[in-house]
Length: 439
Image (cartoon, rainbow, N blue to C red):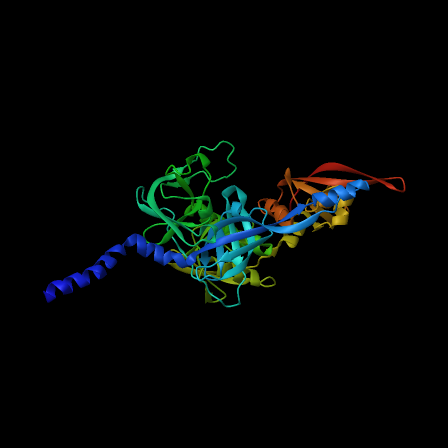
């Protein structure tokens, strides 16, 4: 009798252990990294009653502004310093972004960079200096098994964690959506439920590794067992651009590095770049900077961009061979001066208005270096550079991005808005195209 009672008493504990299967363990492992994202945006409106009053006097009521909730989605912490990955469409037109952590805290976050055509955006939590956050582990890009169990996680509408399980139905699916603006060709497809509030959350395998970012794009398929996610390969490509000196500090390094955590592998090197001149090669691994090991892509980027006025020494591994290389990064201002001989400034709102362009369009040519490629084609100072190789420009990054790909002697087409004074008070602006050869 006592033995039977003891066995019955033990049964609930055994059942509880059985319930903690691979799915539960994977969710528990990843849960602390999943966040809720809420945004606000500025909305302009006129009070209709005030408008009637002002119209009586032949005027319009003044425009008032207020903040309103805009969108709510999910995200995932990818680095212990508080970097968060989500969908770009979750943040579109946001004036402020707030992140709710699993411990209940709500922190403001700063949008850093995004790529609309891949629907990926990067945030940074505003937290006390030195605070560390749990971060998700990335799966290997080619470690996907058709039919394996996957879990879609999110924190929709701030209600708490949502988890749904399914299988990986396809590793390379293109949703048949006419006019779909996203540039990702090979989506992951799953029958795990992915609802709009779960957009930006992680899709994981049973090891608790991130294999994709949930995204709701195929409206006709909602509720039909068809969900999609941005694959980890596309995410790694985006992060290689996001955490680069070119994007974060307007410095030319010229090498793309992959690997949120070690090993950090050089995947491409631009010809003529500081990285190329230092001897970096595709496939090499970066293990340290200035004699200290680097723990990941975020730290590598921080250490590279901290050295703006001196070269840095990279510790590299080429298979079994260890070597070092000294690299001096170049600012975008110096790159543009070296390639074209121009000094460019962002136009003030007053200057933009005088050139009849919107703020953020074009760059003001403050000076032209004598004997430079720009001087040889008689490019006038005081003009506005609005295009490079038929691409609109409004930032030093956009100009540098074109010039970084140019070899010495390559042609580049510049589109300018040039002022010409007609009389004492009238100025005519005309658009001019010029071809220069970079040095």
